[in-house]
Image 1 (cartoon, helix red, strand yellow):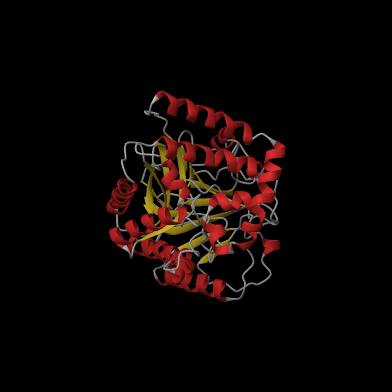
Image 2 (cartoon, helix red, strand yellow):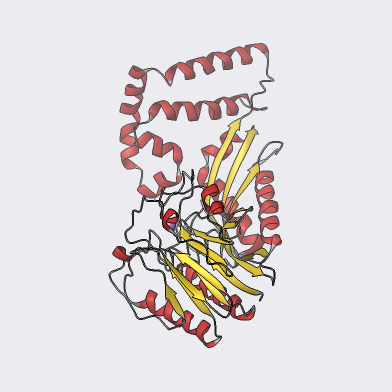
Length: 420
Ligand SMILES: [Mn+2]
């Protein structure tokens, strides 16, 4: 008989969202509760779609609970599923491995937890479904867990539940490694994976899916996040649909300053980009804005980072103050060189360019420079330093880098039309 289930992983309940705290109007409560709100959405979706069961493939918790509230929240959500007659199958990953969790609560009867001692198969007889899985006993599991999973149960729809780095995901610790071909060879119908935070799917003998994490937590987890809905028809055919359940989305907006005549033009371009992002759907966004491109405005943007940042914030506030927050403004432009003065101006600038280039490599000069600016640096407050990347370089003693950063801006300023 046909049925439907939802597969989610890497919920990291109560994991803090990082990167917006410096922004005074950042919605702190919304950020703190994002992982819970997304999980509530997941449960609501399971109930509304009347699925038969829910599979959670590891890292439900971010780590040991600070107090019992995280566990109480989970119990309450599972109780909502129980009322709707929906079962949940829970497997623990590296973040919520058995040895990591010192606090425990008795879970409602509709929740089945995969043991960590050895692989186990749970059957749902009325649906003829068999779920194979093994939880992590410890944070670091370097064995290939899938290798020991049992043979398929004939006459059943077989699901392998596994927390794994698969092969070659350098961004994630290489836990419970295995190969795609190996999973196909197992003869299961579907592999419900967890651990890798980006959606990934392989088809073949089995349907193998990483749903990605339920809710992005920082700017390296960008784009739509959620779970997958898996529909199995009477013949055992599998259809996978992505469900987008995140309550706050991280994005990187790259804005090219190329062709902009003024800093205001750059700001307007940022505003257009932000409007496009928020126009796609109504999920609130946390955005990193990266300004790039070759531009005469490089000096003006770079030399006045605080004003550039304020301009970007003003655009975000104007586009949608309730649904847009700026995580960071990164100025990654480079100078444009068109020296259109008289011959002697061009020559003088070329000389200056080579002097500046050599200065950046000249240890004696750099030592002298540090001596001259040290008294000034000592007087600058921490707030100002944090807002000015060039001052940060000076403070860290990276004067060679400082000269290399300042030189293009200085040359750009001097060579701009109307420069003295
Ligand atoms: Mn993990």
